[in-house]
Image (cartoon, rainbow, N blue to C red; front, side, top):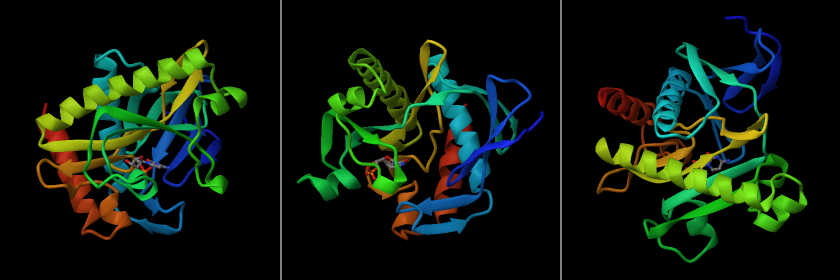
Length: 236
Ligand code: C5P
């Protein structure tokens, strides 16, 4: 593997050029942050944990017909991906109410959404990722209305696949955030899907097994991440 110049360094991942113009190398670091970077730490093994889970989940999504940027793992913290032109949107799917939807609207934590709720946020830390509607997405030139419909349908499919998978290992998929990017004429699922970007509750208990353990100091976050990884990798 040839890891080239750093293209972008985010809060928990570093993106580098590779020897191929249409592929990138993503390194998952041990950094963990919350509240727009207001809380930060380094946790040994966190990068490997999230990289492994992300790779696994991209794999089951590909098997279910969802196209992703994932190519292969180069080592436990390094993922080779297709180079996408990222669309600055966070697509959030919610099966139960938690986090910002409870803070911003009169839902009780744990309220079931049937059908699931899809929310789009404009990805911009300086603006605190404001919620964005379809007309603003189109006015900004990010996606057409037809592409928005395809992205939302894809996000709901991701939800169906992941919800069923987590149910099988005793975890409830409460919500998650995904990001998409353009690759030629197609739009592919990019970024990561890990305990940093999902809410997972121990089935039947509402016990957090995700980054909320870190955000709200609910216990040992690495223990939660290791438990989720072990169940995922024990499932196959
Ligand atoms: O904070 P909020 O309740 O809107 O988050 C919904 C879901 O999206 C959670 O699983 C959270 O971890 C994820 N998320 C994320 N990155 C963000 C915002 C939310 O991964 N910038």
